[in-house]
Length: 323
Image (cartoon, rainbow, N blue to C red; front, side, top):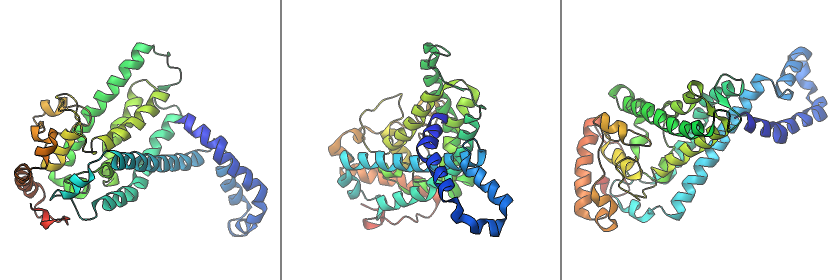
């Protein structure tokens, strides 16, 4: 993240500092209110690129703004290019004004996630992590292995964090909001409580503090996991893979609640007896929209939903969620 911060410093923040020096005289009111000593301290925060407060503010804004751009960009691309919008809209479990509710939820919670996340980046640029510069510093074999390690470490930790969020003490206050979307769209991907989203992102940030990770690879992986979050909500059931926890597996999680907690793979769900293979009908466009198939899905979903949540307070677009 230090390279990103350097870019922002040289192209944005330092130029704003120059403007401060140019027009600083117009801030004489600050001297009369706060005194010259405090004004000097405030000025040093925003004009010194090494000041930790300025760095924290910059990293918060970078995380928030770039996270929002990535979310809206990737989700919009998926939604408007290949997401089966009409099929989703016809499903009895699709909510009234769902896409706008998802976007609103995400945009309201992304600042909170950024606020909790930026201290990890701040610690990283101050040398507390094991991020390194050169691609060959630990050898190219380790570089490749570190990707596998990152995915397995993250998947293992997220599995348990996600499963814990389904505990009755945590589900209602933290995770229920994300399960509002029984039929997810790409915009569902980041539509959750900011504490929920932050908790599930923790493994990504903890990993480079435990294991060496190239800093450019770290940025790539951070972007990848955000893209993956969109992909597993996009309804594009490309493959009924037994290893990869793809869009179909995650759709099962939204429909049936207590299965498929993993992020990338099915391994830990299988070991934890929470794996549920997607039905074959999900991969057949005609069967997927068959009324008998949908009625069976709804029956199972409603039974589990009542057990997990009690009364269903969702506002559905059609017939109160019934076929």
